Image 1 (tube, one colour):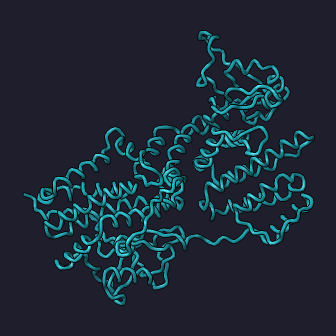
Image 2 (image 1 turned 90 degrees about the horizontal axis):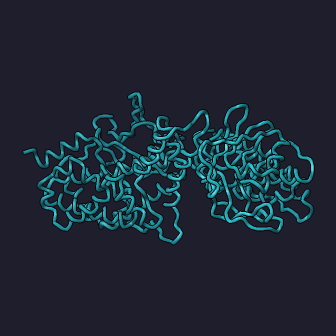
Image 3 (image 1 turned 180 degrees about the vertical axis):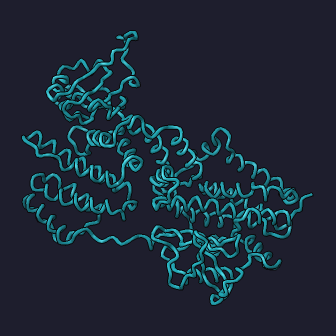
Length: 621
């Protein structure tokens, strides 16, 4: 890293100081460097040494934890850095000229700062892979990842785009050295943009600010190809990211001609139109068939009322012509959906609470009309293979979990009270966990005979064990919690009939869900599992919320970046769980019969109704 104002190859701090700014240094070794002070003085910077009254210890170096650097402008702190020791060897000033190599490099992590200064420090701290004599730094990569994951907390996407354009389009340079510095700065901005787009994938695909930013940046970079032919590699990288297809081949003549060819291609073709991905996404659709029960369905986001009704009619074995779909809006209004009306809005949320009614808009369907229907329902569940059911549940959950972006957890934590289209996949997984828990309760409590209930509970215990074996802790927790709910656990006569080995297995599985010692049993068990794996999302959100509520986001108008680093470190678990380095794929081929059953779960979500069913099965003594 280097200071912009003359400390290159001498010092490992990189806030971009402005003339007449003030820096507080706490390290005597740094202050003793006369050349550094002289160069800083030329730019009008002042140094203040922190005179400690404590005893001086010359025999051992000052600890890194005690070394902080503060950058001040106009009498206010704008950036606070903490020195850390990098295990990676770094080339010193003399080493680059053929001298020694320092044992370890001193780097600085961001403690707090204004958004603008944090970004400046990040750009200065970046090391490019093909820089001669340098290698990428783990600390630099971590800082970049922390920033890209958490920037929505302290600046909007529009502000970030404007700031990056400002750093790219700096004032004109004079001289060979300034020309080299300008090229390096531009390449660092392009590297950051490349990392941003790679990290966010489709997360920002429909953001209008990002579209405009990318168009503008392309024009600037193509213009700069005349003077900086080395930018061609970065142009091609941006083309690859944004899937720009060139219509004209670039000849191998001068860089100017290459730049012109690229520029004219962009002018003529523009950025490719990227249609919305909305139609290809899947959602969980709740269709209420009574006032207290619903059918949970896996559906395409672009589904229309006619298609949804067809799926419900087939599942409930009711003629399609007798049904209509009604949306109960949030102000208790009733909207009759026409066959081609879309069920979901652009934000992937339903137009209201969906109800299937008879055409006279009278009483909706009943989930338990007579005993024969309940017997048939239980028989179907008992006929399914437990491993196949666990596979279908895991495949369903993995489809949702694999589409979750780490930033969804950040948006969910910091924008909890506002509905955000940035948290759709995360909310679906949380919703699925709740659905599976209710499904377990519904199946057990709708089973009218004692012996069949015992078989059902045994079956759910085995399914939970299989989910754990398949590294799906989301469904595992949901099933165990469903069996532990008061409405099910109070069925004493049923639990007495459960064989001893199943009770022992259930007790072992329960231990993993034990919340004591901050869920230590779950954390230890999950840590031993190989990726890919599906975590228990509510616990992950609990960890992030604990960090959020236990630490201030701003200190004296400065962004508390230490807090954001802790949050970024936590949400990175999503990425680690989604990766499959060893080919341990979590998705497996499942039975079509089981998949059809799991994709359309019939659930009662009214707790009072569930308790009434429980007391009907085993009345209170």
